[in-house]
Image (cartoon, rainbow, N blue to C red):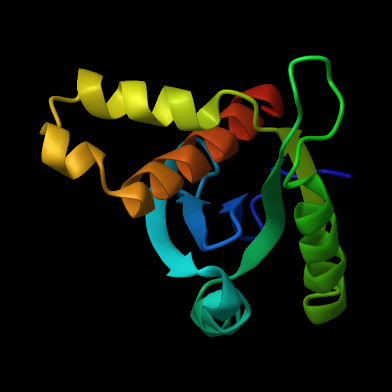
Length: 144
């Protein structure tokens, strides 16, 4: 399957119990940009609205693993969300990518970018940046 064939954008998802960080690729699927952070119970409606105006060809979802490569605590919720995504958006493939260290990398990116300590405490920002990291890693690993 060609994930980067240019039919639409690729949407990165950092799924959490309370919040979901979202990122989207540019039209050429070269780089990821932050999209939004939404409450977990509102993500389906958000995605439906977003997809109406923006073609999405693939969902890239971070899958939580422990250091020993076994599923992490949130993995069953992510798996349930994948099932829900596939039912709700049957024409859009879902790809899982390892999300180990993305929150830590997001936090470091905020420090490196000069973000104030008060702003770094905003977990919604961390979730959004984590989604960017998940999506960017996918884009880099799947270049044509």
